[in-house]
Each structure stands twice: as structure tokens, then as C-alpha cells.
Image (cartoon, rainbow, N blue to C red; front, side, top):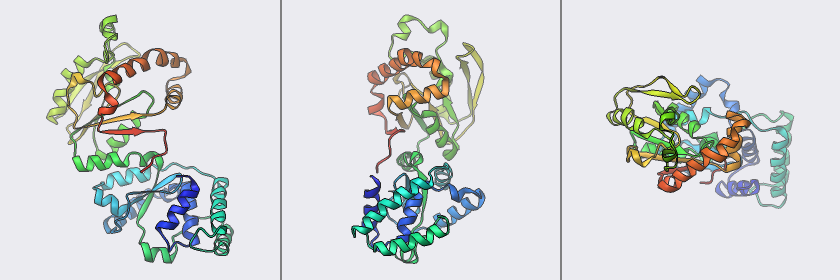
Length: 349
């Protein structure tokens, strides 16, 4: 939704809303929740106490125009864990500026002047004046709003909001193995890292199964999904994943073009396999839940350049990306995934 739609939707949903509550909405959409994380121990303790007491059913996620309110009562109903809530909330990044806040307030003034809000333009001006005099600090909900709606939520960034449906699916299905596949530069590793933190789940990286030179024949590289050492993954990883016990596998370093030690995967209730080709049909349906992560080409190329350097972009454009796309098309990887995440679009729920 655009900002005007956000404000009108909020006013319709909460007819007892006061000017202070709409100004708070402006602040949250512009600056997010970073100001609440200065004392992380206290912030987590307060979140856990409020989560335990939350009874407001409501929607799970609410767009505030740049960020989302994650309602605690709905989150508890969906089965989201305390670790998941804290990871989503504590990932807030500093952002926003006073100029952006003033743009939002100007839209709000226009709606009040057009009598499209449940309060007068004069009441909004008075609330604004008080807020400006205090140099725009974080604002509490009005007493009327708290009494009528008993708000219990945390503001999370849009990047984390994209993961909430996946976390709800995990809470419901309780998978033992999760495969996170997707396009290079799409954000697979970031998704897997956050899941690992929330679920305390070790991660197997498909990058460790770079195809060694001896196998890089024209025939092998011409095979859909041939650009991964699927034989070694099947031999060294699949048995350990299915058992749930600790195991290790050799790591192939593409910079050395040789094996470089081993990665230990401890025993754990949940394991994650991350990287392109993690849903390769050669492995069968070993994962209980499959995720496909994607983003627009321009976004992905910019991320690759930032990560690996501009000089490697031609190789990605001309070689690695076409090979990935051939495999994704041949195996219907994206359409067959249980969950799809787009990391460069504003999420809609």
C-alpha cells in the first residue's frame, strides 16, 4: 500500500484512533524499531513478558508503510517461538530521516483537512505542535487507543516480515530438514542464517560441493544441474541428515580447487541445507520443507558485484546464471518449492 492507503486503512480499522496514534504510525513507518534496542537484555525481557500475556487476536502482520507491526497475540496463535520473535525484532536496522517523517506527516495533514480521518485537522495540528516541541521523540499510543484495542505488537523491518509466513509454516509442520534453494544473489544465505539462529539449526552449504576439475567435462557441464558434486553430497551428507546424528563432510574450496578440511554438523533436531541445487532431484525428497529464494536480475547482479567484485560479473552472466536457470527450468525448482520468498519486493500479506 502507498502511504495514503496505509493511513486510511488504519483509520478504518481503528475508528477510536487519535492524532497521537497516527503520528506514532508515521514514526514507526519511517524509523522502524531500532530505538527500542539500545538495551537488548531489557528489550528481550519485556518482549517475552508481553508475548506471554498477549491476548489480542487480530491480524498477524500490519503494514505501517515501510515496516510491519507483528501482533504478538496472533504470533502466539501461529506458534511462533520466542526465539523467532526476538530474531525478527532484534534485526531492526537504523533507517529513516526527519525529512521522510515530515513527508508522512504532510500526507496525514491532507487527509485530516479533507475530513477523511476520525479527528479534526485542528486536533492533529495541536498534537504535532506538542511533538515538535519535544523534538519528535518515540510516541506512546493514546490512552483511548490502548483502552479500546489493547495493542501488543513489535515493529519489524520488511526484510524480516517476508520470512514470517515461512516461520509459521515451520511452526506448523515442524520439519527436520529444510532446503533453501534459489538464484545466486537472491539472499539464500541470509535466509538460511536467520533460520539457523532461530531454530538453532546447523547449516550444510552447497558451495562446499563445487564440482572438482576431474569431473568438469563438457558432458557433465552440459547436464542440467551437473555443476554440483551431487554424488559426494549423496554419499557424505544425505545419510547424516536422515539420521539426525552428528556427521562431517569434506569442503571443496573453489579458490584452491582442492579439498580444504571438513565441516562438522552436530546432532540437532533441525538441519538446513542452503544453496543452489539443494533441491536437486538426484537427492530425492530428502527435505521436509523446500524454500525457493529469488529477486530481480538487477538486484541480484548488484549484490553479486558487492559480494564478489565487478570483475566476476561476466562469469556469472555468461556461465553460472544460465546453468542455474537451465536446472531450475528442468527440475521446476521454483514452482515445486513449498515456500517462495522474493527478497527485493515490498511484501504484501
